[in-house]
Image (cartoon, rainbow, N blue to C red):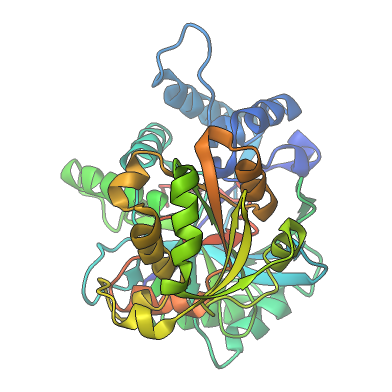
Length: 439
């Protein structure tokens, strides 16, 4: 079963840096070049300098990791970052408007250390997606240089008793130790709960409950696998360390049964079909779907622009320059189709669409590698690409979000989901909590 520990985090000192909203940033994997430059200009101590250091003129590409390490050291020396005096967990609350709708949600979890485990039968940590070599190499070089986790892996766990939700609510009833709003209007609040302080009973309950069953990685697979590689390297070169901190990784633990998490869809855009390919797609879509024409783009966009719509129903939108369709999966047809994996992965919307893309558009895994399939978080953007024939875009397939229960079910059966299946929103801020690999 998962082993979870309190720890002494590195945190920004507001008396040194001022407004914390100027020094935190999104995680590295959602920061593009324009946002990176904006964050670098926002504050000389912005966490982007640690989590996504830029390549400067005259440097070799790997120099940026060493520069991040030197900067981290200097911030610890001058008090920009201070280490908490007691092992603690860190209760974290995010309040946000669901994209595409008017509903406001609040989700709570807690930061702690999770002991690293290799994936496999009987493991206490379960993945749900494949990883790519390039991001893992980048994260490894950064971790090796800095010896810290700058941003967390996100893990989900069930607690039908409701005890953990009540404990989180009790801790967050007092004034927060940090309170910031990000550029997307999400409010982030943080409470320090010392292991041996007034919140000790709540801390124990949260650690115990979250560790009762395997943890499913919701976000941060690249960071987790990088931490495994770093651990193995340190093990090979250890010098008599007892229970070393590099055996653990920073994780944000979120409960899934008593609060509603938001998983946004990632829409698919197919390139290079040509007029004949689009004609065949529209003519043969009924092989796999019940088909309903839409009056126009606005109807289709509206149907797939709100995260409030429950996913997992086999519902898709299809848009081409010849018009659009609402598609409903014919489950009997897909059931008769050979699909690898267990029952949970076979019934996923993204799996059904992957099969349909192969059969109707000739977009298999090799075609994905060749660039015939691209992705967008925005339904409007996906449709725009088709309308403008951007880079040969001919068809957009719109999806609903994947239910959290389906993600856990896939991981529990030892399977992984197709690429770009989940996008948990909102992202945990980088810079609120840094995990040093030391006790």
